[in-house]
Every structure is written in structure tokens, then in C-alpha cells.
Length: 540
Image 1 (cartoon, rainbow, N blue to C red):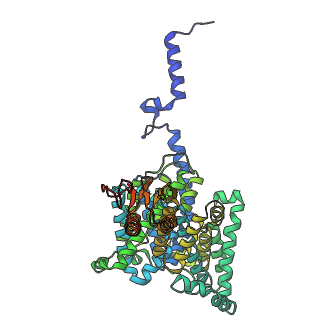
Image 2: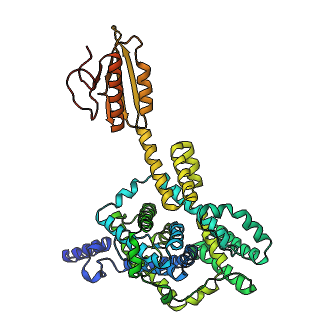
Image 3: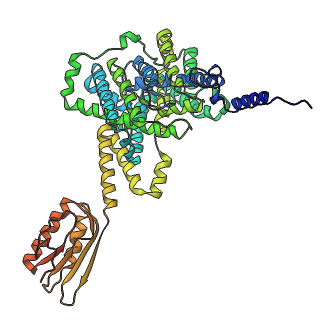
């Protein structure tokens, strides 16, 4: 056997190492990013495919959300373009996709009805600036502290109001303004639909669209290539056009006509309390929905995790531009983001490309929107609203933690009966009260000495929610013989101002009628010396 020269053996080993670890190869074997050529190519191919899937989902959803929000359909597509081309490029999250979301539909509709379409740009722009400020102040992580029950209740309330409004659109009827009116008007809507042939046809189109949305995903092979919303809208559009059915279609006015930047008169309205409240609602709800979506998307893939503060800045930049264009507000959308991950996206290029396809679509074939039936889009949004209802979660919460289930239901009911902002505030207040109640564990121990003096010790956390119980137990411990009481508060880990004031008054009142009442120091109690109320010395 011929001997192999040592120098040749070293070269062979070097080549083997390069093949086993391409990241250590020379510059000629690497692409622009320092990766192997095959890696970026595979990633780009996967990103292009995923972007097309997200684009096909984004078109019907963006148009439907715009219609449900009471704005021109082009504004929904503009928000999708900005979400792809701008927010998609910025750091924060790599795979979640931004655009107009069903979660803000109700709030946008109310804002447009109350302040007008021209004021929408100011609302969205100011909310975007507020989001940027929150991101720079590193407040993004605090949104994860919001009660999950409140978020689920918010989504459920949005889903109910959205469905209540779209059931009218499915019958080509204009919905009432408020949530309660939409719900109470459904019986009359059903009667009017049954006696109207055109309304029945539109309702049939919407119902068939929902049926396709439910049944299509069961064919897994087909659902992998064509998303259900696209199939449902295309089929409904084809049937309506082929049979020339008397169903309302989308109205398209042109992109340049729809884009209306806000003027100085619109900015002057920022001094109104109602406008400021709406801006705050836009910013907080959009941020919460985005960051909760980011947490959900991070669980779907093994890539880089979301930087919440950078993502908040990216969303704020997107909303600032959307506001400058007079378009809809944006959030990260869990439907499009999940579709992006499941379609095999590898980098943020997929969400940027989805914005490119939307821009090409709006610029070249806007006429394609005019053949889409309104009832079909209403069916898509009805299905989206139904998916926002947390049926399984509320059953699980009821069995495991009924307090959380009550918060969820109350938040949902408050949103339906009032509006989105007030409903969320009510839910947050109830969640805080529930947490305060559950963490305020107070225990009162009593012991009677040989001379008849009652020694009372209060343990745990005392706040105003537990104050009635504490006072009742203290009154029950008072000796009838007129002997003194020794009140020991040193076992309290926390005592709020209400409890401190009430216990001070109780001690002073009983000191006058029964003699000295001694107290041990509790948290925040004034360190008086001697006997009497709040004294560290026992009563003589």
C-alpha cells in the first residue's frame, strides 16, 4: 500500500472540518451574511412561499376589517402595506406579522362615528407616538403583567360585538351604532331578512362563506397550499358573479382618494377629553394585543425571541406612519403570524415581502376588490369573531379558578354594554380588586389572661377589603367585665392607611370606655412611647 504524505493528510482533514462546520469556511464559501450559500437560498425560498400565504390571508381580512370599521377598504390595505414594509423591517420580533386587526374594529368604528373619518389619522398617529415613548421607557414588559382573564375577556367582548355587527352586514343591512342595540335588534333583523328575498340571498352567501371557512381546514393537504379565507371569498365571489345575484359589493374609490393625511384642525382636537381617551385606548389595547401575540408566536417556533420594548417601538413607528396617511391602526395579528410560522418562514423577509405583494395588488389590480360581496367578508369576520370567544378557557377557569372566570365574564359584559375602553378599565379594576382580596389574608388570635385582660394579635396582610372582618372580630373579643385589651399588630406584614386609621380610632374609642388599650407596633404605625393607643407597652 502506498503511503500518504503527511501534508496531503492534513489537507484532507482540513477539508473534512470545513464540511462538518461550514461556519468556519473561507470567505469564498460564504454568502453576504457569512452563511453557507445553500442556507440563505433555502431560507429565501421558504420566506417567499410564506409571504404569499400571508398575503392571501391578509387581503380578505384587511378589506373586511376596513368595511367593518366604517372606512374605505383601501385604508385597511394601506395599513397592511405599512405593517410589512416598515414594521416588518424594524427589530423586535422576527416572524409575527402586523396589519389591521379585528381587535380594534369596534373601537375604530366608534371613533369614526363620533369624531369623523378625518380625525382617525390624528388618533392613530398620536397613539403611535405614545407607543414609541412606552418602548423607549422600556415599559413593554409590563404589558405581560396584565391579567390573562382581562385580555381574554377583552377578546371575547370584541368578538361578540364584531359578530353582532357583521350579522347585519351578512343581510346587506346597516347595523345599529351601540353594542346593546346590535344585540337587541337581532330578532327584528331575522324577521326582516325572512321577508326579503335579497336579504335572504345575501345571508345565504355569508353562511356559505362561514361553512367553507369551517370545512376547508379539514382537508389538510389543500389547507397547506391555499388558506381558508381566500378559498371562501373566491368561491363566494365566483358564485355571486356567475349567477348575477343581487348582493352588495365592495366599493373602491382609489388609493390616492382614500389616503387623507390629517390637517391642523384635526390636531387641534387633541385637547378634547374624548379624543385623548380614544388615543389612550388605541395605544394600550394595540400594545397589549401585539405583545400577547408575540408571546404566542414565540411558542410556535425555535428562532429568536421577541424583544418587547423594540417591538413596541416598531409598532409605534408603524402606527405613526399609518396615522400620517389617515389609515387604520395596526397591531401584530395572531392569525397572520401563525400562518407565517406554519408556512415555514425563516426570517423577517417573509413579512416584508407580504407587504410588497399587498402594495403591488393595491397599485395594479384594485378593481379586483369591486367584485367581492360584502356578505362574504362579513362571513369571514363572523368566523374571526367566533374564534375570539374563549369557550375552553372559561370552562377551565371555572373549574380551576372561579375568580378569574368571573373577571373574564364581567370584562366581556362591560365591553358589550358600554364600549371597549370602559370595559377594559372595568376588567382591570376588578382584577386588581380580586388580587388585593386574595392576597389580604388576615387572622385574629385572642387570649384571655388571668386578670381578665384580653390579648388580641392580628396576623397577615391588612387592607381596606378585610377591614370589616377585622373590626367585627375585634368587637367580638371585647371583655364584658370592662377589663383592658392588649392589641398586638406586630404580626402584620402589611397594613394600609385605611386599616391603620380604623384601628387607631377603635383603640382610642375603647380606651375611653374600658381603660387603656395597648397595641404593639404594626407596619406604618407611629412609634409612640408609653401606654395608650399605639403604645408598645402593655396597659397597666
